[in-house]
Image: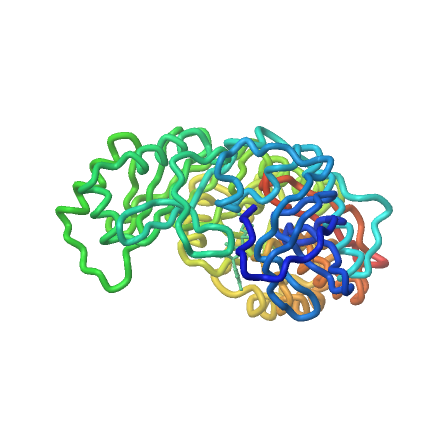
Length: 433
Ligand SMILES: C[S@@+](CC[C@H](N)C(=O)[O-])C[C@H]1O[C@@H](n2cnc3c(N)ncnc32)[C@H](O)[C@@H]1O
């Protein structure tokens, strides 16, 4: 945690009561105002430094740790605090899972007024380190490469990151050891880069994001790409669009993934999530499905392979093309793919897909607010909602429950170990169906 700057009024030592959605520690100031303290853990005794006033609460922008809480451990990563990407790394793995379950239960109760009989099970799989299949790094004008620091756009240089897949670690070390001329080229022409490992393949894809308004000098960039390619297989999609990558699905079959297409970051946990969706569909006897926010077909392809027929809706053109290609290659004919916005597509599907067995939603972080009215009008028997934000999930579930569905099983998946982030799968059944 950062030392508090000297000019502020020093507040008394406070004890962190719990963790809240967003991952921060929570306590109350002596005047009763709720305070969020990012980086603080339950039981920590903290002296809060500067405070930012928010609507209805304050947020500590710095604190000093006076005494650690009972579960706090030394994080395995030396830059965990400065970097901030792994905000719960100072908690043991079992405690992380317990807190994720209670955050989800609390969000459902507070925001959704939905009480669970018990906190949800959090499924974990694979290694809680070395799991991330893709990572975005930022580059400054002098070619320093790293993550943005905690709530700042200041680059924290990282030569090593413990949560990325082993092949990405090699690629990151290559970047950290770039010779001076290549480093200068990197800083001059590029502002960010994405590294991706293809599951089971061992290679690394690199995409460089050009700096705005700068004209490329092709020879300099070629020298840079060659230097990087010495240790990492390079797909330079900003200039030469590389082909579709093949991602094997653990249950059989494969996805096709274009440059920049969305994929889940943790393949072992994704396998568990996909298996839960497919077995949930099968156990309910579902024959037809809608896959809304389908991406490259992470759920559609396994559901189609399981013999269900369906419609996938996705707005991103590259992902739509990749999904169509994967279906063609695997001769999966029972899936229609609609390119476009989910809310609009649902309006049109009303005529043909009324009473569909299963509607699966996996929206971005902001949730599926606008899509809920046309979804409800379609009257699917079962709704399965996959969410990465428990609070927007709770908001959307309340709406669906008010429209006549009953919340059933809720399961969580530890897609992002070492962080407060958690993926949730919630099942809802239409009353009377
Ligand atoms: C969280 S990702 C899930 C993708 C996929 N279900 C998976 O598991 O890999 C959300 C997807 O929704 C797509 N998307 C975002 N807004 C959309 C909209 N309004 N209509 C259709 N698709 C949308 C994004 O392009 C992205 O592929």
